[in-house]
Amino acid sequence: MRTDRGWRKFYATGWMVSAAFGALAAVQWQARLREVERRAEQAERTRDEVARRRAVEERLRIARELHDSLTHSISVIKVQAGVAAHLARKNGEEPSDALLAIQEASGDAVRELRSTLDVLRREENANGSGIDQLPALVERARSSGLPTTYTVHGDRRPVPPQVDQAAYRVVQEALTNVTRHAGRASASVQIAYDPGTLTVRVDDDGAGSQRPPVPGYGLVGMRERVTALGGRLRAEPGPSRGFTVVAELPVSGAS
Image (tube, rainbow, N blue to C red; front, side, top):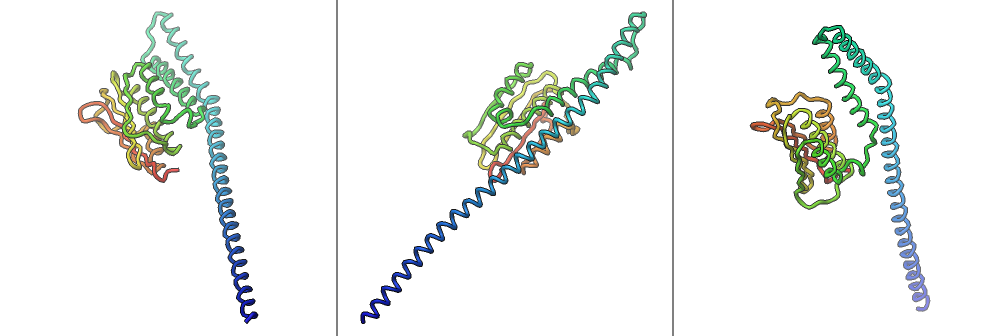
């Protein structure tokens, strides 16, 4: 009888020891799993940072190449065209239309190229290009002579960094197009926080073309940026006048 009680105690002790070791193993496994997940997330962040740094370096390299080659050449063309026009007037002649067109086109090309270089050199970051910066962007548009309103619909909430930056870039490009192509116009910028979606809308009442736009680099870049995030972009003339740009950016599942 005593032997039976001894064996029962022995078995009970064995089960308790086994349960303790099992619980300890489970805790250690959970800790190891969390450590593996942490290292995986850190590795992912490191890859993103390396890719981002390489992208910035490549933009700067392209900017330097463009500046060293195109900007100097176009500036020389502009100066030579201006000198030729000046000499023609000095000799009592009117410069030819072709010469004046070259002078004007080269001036426009220099300005456009410098604007492009400025964008390439500007490192994109959340602090400088996000939804929080849209009021400042709208204010700059107003100060440049474009009456612009800014409205937010829905409850503001954090969005993924890529969506945050894409929203800013869409508004920036849309307002730039209004300034360049709409003539005397006013614009409105609307941000809507919908379930699972951030909607960006820019309207103007300018006298732009009523035909579908010819895709330029700005519009193509806008569409590529939105579709890369799984979103949709609509850019089209208004029913009677003006132009509308609408970007729908998914915020659930975006990273």
